[in-house]
Structure formats: C-alpha cells, structure tokens
Image (cartoon, rainbow, N blue to C red; front, top):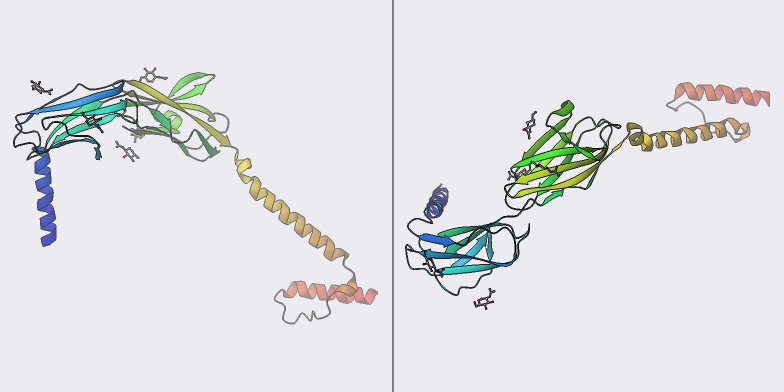
Length: 271
Ligand SMILES: *[C@@H]1O[C@H](CO)[C@@H](O)[C@H](O)[C@H]1NC(C)=O
Ligand SMILES: *[C@@H]1O[C@H](CO)[C@@H](O)[C@H](O)[C@H]1NC(C)=O
Ligand SMILES: *[C@@H]1O[C@H](CO)[C@@H](O)[C@H](O)[C@H]1NC(C)=O
Ligand SMILES: *[C@@H]1O[C@H](CO)[C@@H](O)[C@H](O)[C@H]1NC(C)=O
Ligand SMILES: *[C@@H]1O[C@H](CO)[C@@H](O)[C@H](O)[C@H]1NC(C)=O
C-alpha cells in the first residue's frame, strides 16, 4: 500500500517534470531534415530556468552519443538521412526541470512486406501484411491487386472477402475463403505520408483443396495396398501353416475366430 503510494507519487512527479519541461526556456532548433549526408542538427537554449549542467540527444527512448562542447548549444551529426535514421530527435538540456527541443528527420515511406510470398489453401483465410519502418507514420494505406499488369484498387469489404485493417506503421489485407482461380497473384500495398509514397509487393499463392489432401490420400492409398497384400497373403497361405494354438476360447473377435475355425476344420476335412 505504502509502496504503491510512493510509486504513484514518483510517477506523477515525473509526469509533472515532463509536462513542464519547456516552461520558461526558449529553445531554437535547426529546421527539419528530409535528405542529405553528414547533416548537422542543433539546438540552442536561451532563458534557461536554472543553470545548465549539461546536454544530450535522444532519439525515441535511445540516448545518442554526443559530446558537449558548450552548455547552451548542442549539435548532432546524422551520417545519412534514410529510413533508419529518420525519426524525432530530442535535444535535452540538463536544467530543473529538463528543457527539451525536437528536430524532425523525415523521409518518404519505406514500405516492406512482412513476407514477400504467402501461401494459402483454397477456402482458407490469409493475411497479407506490409509495414512501414520509417518516420513519419503512414496517413493513408491502399491495396491493389495486379490484374494483367494493371493495379486494381482493393477496397475494404470487396466481395465481403477482402478486409483491410491499418495503422500508422502497418496494414493487413485479410482475404477470407481463398479462391483458387481469382485470388493468386501479385498484390501491392501503397503507403502515403506527408512527404510522399512508398509501396511493396506481396505474391499470393493458393493451393487447391485437393493438393492439401494429397498427403492424406497418400497414407490412405498406402494402407489400402498393405491391407490388400496381407489379404492376398492370408488367402494363399497353405492350410498346414495355420497356427495350431488357436483354440478360439479367449479370443475377443468371437465371430471371426469362429468362422476361421470352421474354415480350418473344413479345409482339414477336405485334405
Ligand atoms: C542561439 O539563439 C540566439 C537567439 O535565440 C542567437 O542570438 C544565438 O546566436 C544562437 N546561438 C547559437 C550558437 O546558435
Ligand atoms: C566532439 O567534438 C569535437 C570538437 O567539436 C569533434 O572534433 C569530435 O569529432 C566530436 N566527437 C563526436 C563523437 O561527435
Ligand atoms: C474495414 O471494415 C471493417 C469492418 O467491416 C472495419 O473494422 C475496418 O476498420 C475497416 N478498415 C478500414 C481501413 O476502413
Ligand atoms: C499497429 O498495429 C500493430 C499490430 O496490430 C501494433 O503492434 C502496433 O503497435 C500498432 N502501431 C501503432 C502506431 O498503433
Ligand atoms: C499510392 O497512393 C497515392 C495516393 O494515396 C497515389 O497518388 C499513388 O499513385 C499510389 N501509388 C501507386 C504506385 O499506386
């Protein structure tokens, strides 16, 4: 109880610090970046609320290696602007409370398929997935099916078989009850953000129900062949090879045993 209360208090304190981070201070940041190599981003603080003890850079939750050359000015060098280095860069000045500025590094969407090729069985459902691993997030996802090399849009709910679910970093095209003739082929996911668009291909292959059954049919065929062989062997077995210890009294398959006994007796009589 007491521990919980302390945690809660610390939590609210942290939130309060964060919320108040830029109060009073003025931070001038370099403009947003969308391209280039060895790009230097920077922040410059004025009217710091308390003396500055240091500064550093964060990208998301990761602290970046930077070196402090001045207390009220900090810079960071981005070797190459691409999907991996895109994101929100925060310069943090160690004051009380902390003072932060943000520089945005933005690129056109870098869209990748979760799997380049998906395999499904006729009649089953499947999900084709694309992801965007760059900043900023996708604001609009669209799916296309390539028919005769022409991309045809696939709308959410088409044929009551195609359903799209998306967020800023991912889109799922769910196809239910796969059709062997119509559904296989190339699909394109297209993501748009404020800078432009990016797309990726996913190839869908559909196996017929029969194909899915082949392994099972194979086993059935194998069993049939075995049974046939045993049956023929039993039929051809010479009567004097019949085991003599078959009294039939304790056998669970009474009817069969009785029949066999009858047969044996008859065969012996014939001999
Ligand atoms: C910091 O910003 C102030 C104005 O806000 C400007 O006068 C000063 O030159 C800047 N310093 C650096 C190092 O950019
Ligand atoms: C640190 O700053 C010095 C002087 O500005 C510079 O020569 C050096 O390359 C910097 N190191 C890093 C890791 O940025
Ligand atoms: C597609 O439709 C389903 C329900 O029919 C809905 O839950 C989903 O959010 C829709 N997706 C988009 C991208 O509109
Ligand atoms: C998008 O959805 C995926 C899975 O449904 C989830 O892992 C991810 O956190 C979501 N991203 C956002 C920005 O909501
Ligand atoms: C992707 O979608 C955008 C609109 O959201 C459209 O302008 C663009 O032509 C599409 N690109 C492709 C390759 O389909």
